[in-house]
Length: 231
Image (cartoon, rainbow, N blue to C red; front, side, top):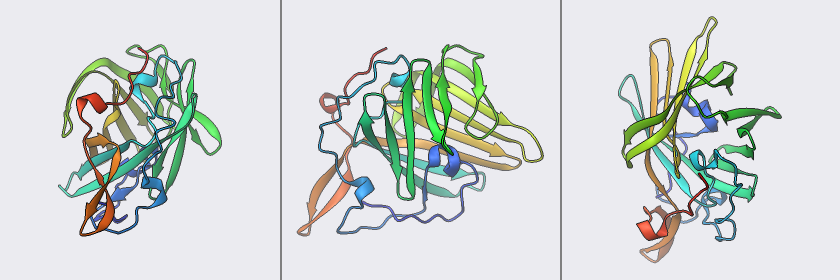
């Protein structure tokens, strides 16, 4: 089903992390928006060959579906679609816009106000630091984390933490898992807490329903998994 772009409560910081758009409910429609349309498959095999891509693959057409919760127990949804533009980069598309990412020899960057800001950076080791997307300092907390999310259990994940001080301090924790990408987003500012956990990672498919084609997310079978990325 397609999700309407509304939310019961504006997500304080999760919605800004990678530009994810929040959704508070679901509704069906007979037309899929362009950002959610199926890919033609021509770009699915593109890989950069850079060492960190496996932690943030952009497999053309794949959909990330997150469930969210805040400190008040309010639930929501986040949806993003990966789009590959070249071997060296691609985008995440949302109902409200897109974010552009590039694979560099020493890491992965996102374009923010025309500048390239690191999402992950080498050396991939505990303690590595860099300037974060939100103006704070990001550091690698772990390169061997295990995490449980609605999609399942993942090992050998990289966890980063961006901390920004000042009058309104905030923390952003992100967990990247091999072959999938971001599986968990957590953010805290004062008493406000936000969490987004990956529920499905799959390609959209067309299904006939009452004579109408609609888009629905379907978890891929093991043999239909995205191409493996270089370690």
